Image 1 (tube, rainbow, N blue to C red):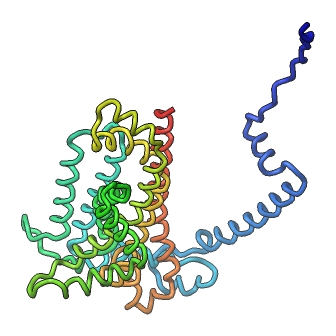
Image 2: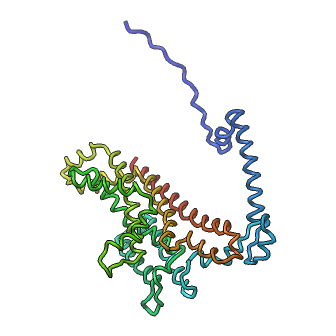
Image 3: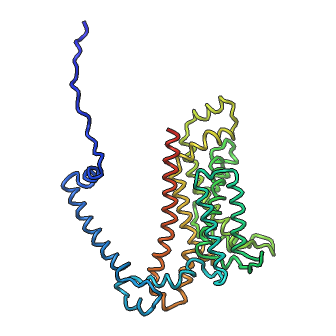
Length: 366
């Protein structure tokens, strides 16, 4: 005979703290030690914010008055240095009378980037729009057409140069990274070896060395009279450097896709390239999206290293604005905080977009 069945009494459902106060209490005051640590950190944060507000707002000087800044020194910030030097910080030593062109070019580049992030605008015209936009950017910055005075690339600087280096290098580095990642997984030994040597060689040197070689060593290898513009050489160097790092991120995503996916695609009669483009690569890129965005943000900040080859982007333009002015040089901290906010705004916007894109992709995949 089978054993008699015994029924277990129903247990109450676990209580979930859905409210904000309950979640906050569980996270910050679950135990006496946690509550004590939270209180101590809260007091420290309040003290720091109070002093920061006094320095940055209450006792700060916002007008470009050197005497007022000197009187408030040690008590308040001198934002007057930004009001006095913002044009040099944002545009470097681009000709003063033509800086409206640099501002318009920056707005055009940012508009293209924002449009590329809107899902509803992903249409066939987006790629031609980018081509037209980049040509217009170069035409505005360089001049020499439509009555615009010519401005050499050595005079480009500030925010427009930062945006140009970042967007063009990313646009060129990403497809190269995908190709190198596929090459490292290729069944052809020569292709696999070439891609491996490229990645290990580029990752084994700092970006400063790559920029130095692109600017000073590369022209020595060319025939006499052939010397590409330094901006082109720098973009090529940054592209090759960024592609090597992104290739390893993409390769990690490719390895995360199970072999069964490729076998299923082969059973449907899909060739290698269709399998990679329609089955493997979308899953791989979705998996490594946080890592890719991390590389994008790092590349944006790494553009500050081009100062070594006398291209004064946003960070270099700040040094250019203050180096020859003893009146405003003591307030370089405020200048660095100004460009820090610009970098933070750009990087945080990229991070927010990546989080939204990742959530949407995972929602569609589930």
